[in-house]
Length: 186
Image (cartoon, rainbow, N blue to C red; front, side, top):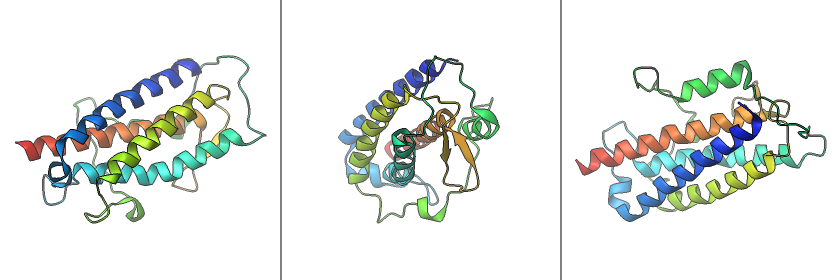
């Protein structure tokens, strides 16, 4: 896939995510804040979790795109996520049977009931506008060569893989929020 296609695919995914979360607004705080099961997150907790990651990644990628030494793109080269990129992106997606691998989250990224409020929804939408802006700026850069730090400090991935990973992570938890809302409505 060409780098421009990666960016357009990510923008399309974010726009769909915005539409889904906009629909959440009409549901009310009770539905959004009700946990579907004892050890499951509610919809607001899913969004607050994503906001905590966005706090890091919007800043990290924004810094990379402002750095004067960043490698700019001359041609629309084929994109290669690399070993770690492919591994992390795959870990966010359902397997061939549609099953999602359960993962533990860092304590700092695990929202409690008290921390996930309706402003989590608005903050998420604000971050998505920032992501769209970042993706527009990323068109000027080589997605294969600009390295980004991850929340796991010893690993770095290229710019494109980092963005794919973050957006796949968002998709995973928006789907989780939808399942939580469906369970509450049932």
